[in-house]
Image 1 (tube, helix red, strand yellow):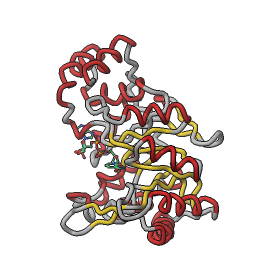
Image 2: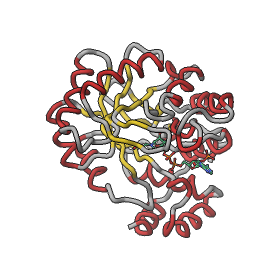
Image 3: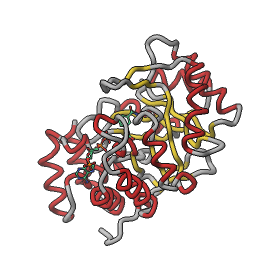
Image 4: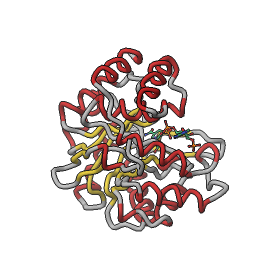
Length: 286
Ligand SMILES: NC(=O)c1ccc[n+]([C@@H]2O[C@H](COP(=O)([O-])OP(=O)(O)OC[C@H]3O[C@@H](n4cnc5c(N)ncnc54)[C@H](OP(=O)(O)O)[C@@H]3O)[C@@H](O)[C@H]2O)c1
């Protein structure tokens, strides 16, 4: 692997025929305090991590209004990176001080939140606006319609979905062009393989959240370790390299609050696995 981590080594994903992003992104949820509530103890460090990501070639950064809430978006703006990366934010979840995440896909709420996020990020247009999670109390089509309107009105450039099924992806695509889907997925948890395949068929980006399973890669760890040893890499780097090799539409967004971990994660962009290694890891996670 190269000495200087460079996210560009992961190759690019084309969001719309005009905007491409390097496929190794950054998840900004972990910039917040404990339980993703409020500010971290060291806000300067959080800004340094966000800034460091862009300096290492990351040009796709994931956040949400509910991270903090508000804290992650604020820190990204304060880090001065919003104009240097595609910033993908979300609406559709509420927080409360106990730490719960409450689905809220009410169209009026979504229309309110886009204004809040635009102000907090300091942008005229949100690059990618993702519906965070379908709300059982609001018809899915009504929530998606709000995102479609926001795109028509120029508040957002691209619309994305998160935590959806293949059926919901198909339904939403009837209403508006969907640029990306963000679901939980990693080498040890491939429950949403069918959603990934649907994204491949449709040319939609697939953003695997929890790409490192926060380090707990369970039954795949032995296979990861043997591949890591062969490449003088870490288990986490191999897990990210597998995500990049497994599909052309994946855009992993590993999250960290540490500059050191950031460098390790971005360096995975340069890690090329052999076909045999990719198959071995795929079989180990099946
Ligand atoms: N759409 C959704 O519903 C949803 C849900 C959850 C997350 N997300 C997004 O997905 C992103 C990634 O998910 P995630 O942050 O939950 O999980 P993750 O990226 O799999 O793991 C992050 C965790 O692993 C640790 N870590 C990261 N790199 C490491 C390294 N090189 N060495 C050791 N530890 C390391 C981090 O701790 P340190 O801070 O100590 O590095 C953090 O606790 C989030 O940041 C967020 O943007 C979306």
